[in-house]
Image (tube, rainbow, N blue to C red; front, side):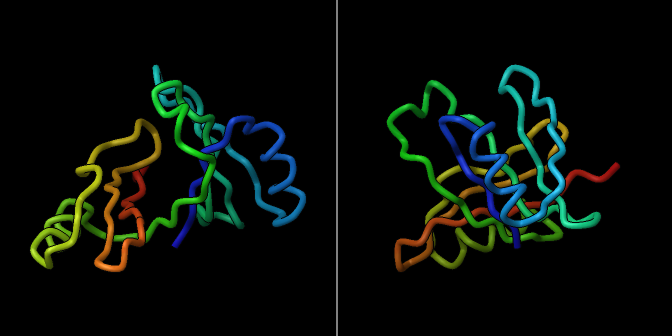
Length: 118
């Protein structure tokens, strides 16, 4: 499991989280979407963050919990079969991986994530 934070100032937040959790930051170019910083503990991706894009200016900064899966599309399909809500269908994030955002029957929002392999 890992988390992603959507921040208004990722540089300030990045310094705090690097210092607090001793994570190694790896900035990743996502093309037109900007930069996404992956935090690693040794070689394992444990978190990430990005600047809040202009189209999400009304969304408060937050952490989104990601559950690592072996098949993002298959897991997303299962979420739908179980009657839960898909807030964002499976989609690729350049140089990062594939993810989908879901909501369970208690209202908790979470993401499914399959890391991109080299």
